Length: 170
Image 1: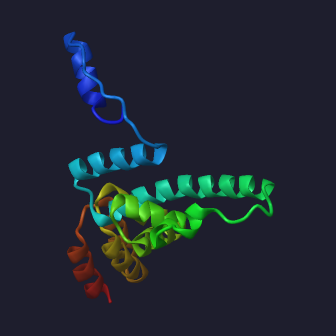
Image 2: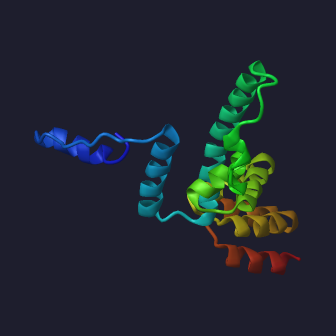
């Protein structure tokens, strides 16, 4: 079930026979459909979308590694036409993931850096407590006042309150 899992469960509980329609398309088209349906309903911030894109990027990177390994077996048989006609955002796993969730590749790269260097802040962006831009501001605040930084990560104060508190300390 690509869309409507909860409706199917509700039908089952009520004894109603649900109606299904077979999806006709590739695995990537199915993923794109699921993402479009869920992103539209969930009202995620750009930072949350970038964090989601990171998960997709991992999958796309793995697919790329597998394709390259497979391509190496056919050495000397020429380049793939599909790669020659790829749109700019399709040429990297980060670009593909960014395009699918509706954010820029740069935003995905920023989110990736945040996850590597500051997992606590990344979790705050993922949960919607901070947006990606505010996470960068939070890093600057954290350097001047670690206590305010912790409050910000916990969501007990806003970025504006944290900036005011950090200025008082400085």
